[in-house]
Amino acid sequence: MFITTQAPQDPRILELVPIMAQASQLLFDEYQHYCAGHEFKIDEKSDHSPVTQADLKVNQFLLAQLAEITPDIPVLSEESDYAQRHDWDLCWMLDPLDGTKEFIHQRDEFTINLSLIQNHQTIFSLIAVPCEQLMYLGYLTEFPYKYYFDNRAWERYCKYKDAEHDAIQIGLSHSSKNPKYQQYIDYIEQEVPVIRREAGSAYKFCMMLEGEIDIYPRFHPTSEWDTSSGQGLLESIGGGLVSLDAVPFTYNLRDTVLNQGFIAFRNEENQKIALAALGNVTMQS
Image (tube, rainbow, N blue to C red):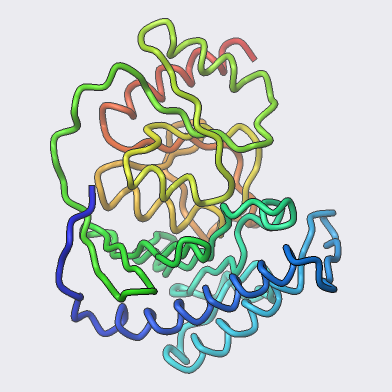
């Protein structure tokens, strides 16, 4: 849960807040423009995934702002050239619009993901939710903050003993049709009832921070900028994100920026359930 707190005094956070507020407003304005039926450009990238004018506008804005406040830190962005990335021990990782398909389908579950990678680990994470006018952010070694753009209010994650639940909340993408998901859920349901919660993009990580999702399985590929911020935030509250081999993801290390599947969990208790169910799925596949 999050409780009201004072504004942090960390210089990096204070520099990023107004920038992300502007970026979120820019993305929200683009979304309203698109939903109103105005002319809106949507293209297809080489991997056949969509890219919109909103992706590119927010990317251009954030690249310029990050270059101003941290000129010595390069940016590994989904929408920019990152050919030299293996020379970077420290870099920002950016997805200016995570959930482009959600955006196109006029679902408001899209985010802006920004993280700071040092020696292949996420050390600072930020997920902004433009349609809710808020963001989650913080360092790996501290509980995260939640900040509301409209009234400039701050909240801080508060560690508390989870109440006993009669069900496990499983987060799924709207497009989760792979039969592995049902195998996974069937195994868990042998022990405890399951509540399915469908949502798009990194928004599911935000729902995990709020206690609305306990376990988030993903059996199809993502990219590093899809998971870095969420992993960092989950790890900061005692949860995590691991590969299907139960190894935490590292970043800007492999030849490809593509991830394979993963399992995300909100706490250690959820981790045990999540990995036990994963073993059942992999044996059957």
